[in-house]
Length: 239
Image 1: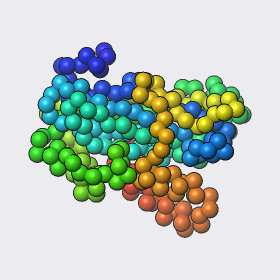
Image 2 (image 1 turned 120 degrees about the horizontal axis):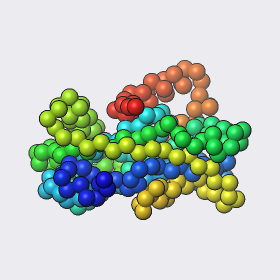
Image 3 (image 1 turned 90 degrees about the vertical axis):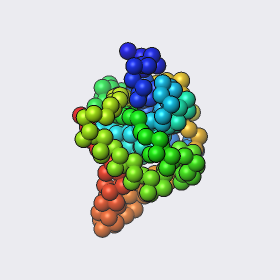
Image 4 (image 1 turned 180 degrees about the vertical axis):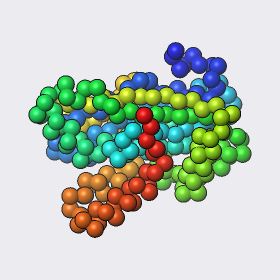
C-alpha cells in the first residue's frame, strides 16, 4: 500500500525514494572534482495527518559502510527533512574492484538495507527542538543534549509495545557508472533522490577521517575505530 494514502497511520512519514537507494559508483570520482565518495539523499515528509510532530530514526545493516546525517530528528506537520547518506570511499573502492573482477552481476542483489522508523512525540518533547540551531546548518546534527534526548526517547519506544512505530525498509543497489564524465553522484530511486551538491561540515569531517585511515598508525586506527563505534552506536544493526 502506498504510504501517501496511509491516513490510518498518522505516525507514518512519507519516504522518498520509497523502496530502494541507488548508489552510483565510479572508478575514481575524486578526479572529477567530487569529494571521493558516493552519496544520496532521502526525503522524509510529514503528510499532516496529525497536528503533532513526528520523530524519525534511520538504521542500517552496515553502519560502518554508510554515514547517515542526520540519523534521527523530528519533523513538523507538512514539512520535510532531507537525510544524506554517504558510502565511504574504502567501501566504494572494494565494490568497484569487485565489479572489475566479476562484473555488475556481482554487485546486484546487495544485502545492505536501511530501516526508517517514525513515531508521534508529545508537544513538550517537540518544543525542545523548535528554533534550535544545528551544526552545519539545515540537515546537520542537533546539539549533544538533544541528540541524547532523541536516543533516550527511541530506546524507550523500542520497549513500549503501546507506542505505535512505523517501520519502512529500503533496499540498496550499487551500480557502476562507466561513463567518461561520471561524477560519483548518487541517483535516488524517487523524485527527490538527487545528490546534494555539498555536505554538512560534520559530515565532511567524518569523510576526511575515513579517507585518511591509510595514513594512520595501528594505534591511531584502533583509537579511530573505537571512536566510530561510540559515535554510531545508535545505528543498531537489524536483519
